[in-house]
Image (cartoon, rainbow, N blue to C red):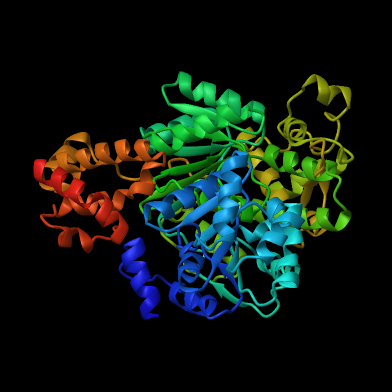
Length: 598
C-alpha cells in the first residue's frame, strides 16, 4: 500500500486513509470486485480513484447525474488527474475529442451516464480501449426495492458479460440487506467482497417534530439554529417547493426552488448559486442533491415524509459532509402517512412491490414515533448495533411515555363503531363531543364513544391516532379513512397494553455563542481573522476563474488550517491536509503571498 499511500498524499493531499479505504483500494487494485457501503462524506470516491491511478488503462465511472460527474471531474483536474466526462451537456466536437482521448489512453478516469455506457457504440469503444476498472456509483439505483430505482442501471450486468477480466466496484451510501442482495445479483457481483462501513454520521443531530404549522416551524428552526447558513428543504410536490421558497424569501431567508418542472437553465442557475454562494437555502423535491458535493450544508429539513428510511438517510446525509455539526430536522403528521400510502396505492407497481413499499414506510413511521434514541433506531434498520447518541432530540429532551391503553380502546372502538369509514379529524370530534354538522348528519352523536374523550386535547388525540397507525393497530387508506389492523382486537379486549410518547413541550436548543463571544474568539484565533477572510476571497475568485465550485479549489478545513498556522515556505504548506503536489505547485506561491500580506 506504499504506492497507494503516496498517491493519497501527493495527489489528494491527505495524510492517511480512513476506515476500510486502504483495504478496499488494495483489493480493487489487485483486480478484485467489491461492493462498498460507506456513508456520505466517508471517502467512497478515493476507493476507485486511487486504484484507477494504480492500474493500467482508464477507469470508467458510471454516474447517474451530470452535476455529480462535473463536480468530481473538476476536483480531479484541480488535483492534476487526467479526468473527463461524457454526457449530454457536451457539444459534438468536445464529445468526439473526449472519445479520442479515451481511446488513445490519455485519460485516467472517464465519467459516463449508464444510458450512454450500454449503447452498442460505446461498448464497441470500450472493446478497443484498455479499461483499468469499472466503478458503478450510486449502486442502489439498480434495486427495484431501493428509493431511487433507475431501469438503465439493470443493464449494467453487461459489463461482467463482455468484460469479465475487468474489476468492478459498486458503491452506495445507503442500502438495507434486501437492497444489497439485489445489487450483487443484478450486477453479477456474486464473487465480490462486501465492505460495509459504519452508517453513523455522529456530527448530524436528528430531530423529528409533530407537524402543526410546518412553515412557521421551519422558519423558527432556521432562525434559531442556522441563520445565514446553507441548507436544503425537501418537499414532496413542485407546487409546495415554489410556494415554500417564495415564502421563505419574503421572511428574509435567501431561498431558491429546484424541481424538474423548472427549465434546465433555471435549475442550473439555482444550483450554481447554492453551491458557490454562502447562506443560500434550496427548497427542492428529491430530484435535488444526489450530485451535490457541497461540504458546508449545515441543515437538511423535510416538510413532507420521505418514502423510506433509505431515502431519509441519503437526503439527510447531504448535511455536514465536512464533519462539522449539522442538523436533520423533519416535521411529520398523520397526513404524511396517508399521502404516502395513497401514492403507493395509486402506483402501477405489482403487489409484491407495494407490500415492500408499505413495509419501508412503516419502518420510517416507526422512526418518527420512536421514544428512544433516533440514531439507535436508524442504525438498527441497517443492521448496525449502537448505543444512545446523546445528540438527537429524544436523547437531549426525552419524551414522557404514558399508559394509553384506555385511550387506545376508545379510539379503536370509535373507528369500529363508525364502520371504519372516517379520518382522524371526524373521529376526534366524536370522542370530544363536538356536535359538528357532519357528526349530526351521520348520527355519530348517538354512538357509545361520543363525548368519552374530553380528558384529552385535540392535539393529544391526533398523537394517539398517529401512533396507533405507527404501531400497526390502525391503517389509513388512500382517502385517509382509518381501519382496524393488526392486533387491534387484542387492544380492544384489554389483552394488550399500549403506551404513547408525549411530544416534549420545550426542546433543548443547541447553545449558540453571542456575537460578542464570537468576536473575542476571532481576536484570539487566527483561523477566524483577516487571513481566513482573505483566503476565502482568493478562493472565490479562483473558483470563478476555473469555473468550479469554491470547495473544489480547497475545502474550508484546508483554509482554516492555513489561517491557524500561517505558512512561510512551501514546505509549511506541504503538510496541510487537502494540499497535494499539483495544488501546491499551482497555488502555493499565491497562498504564501496572502499569508504574508494578511
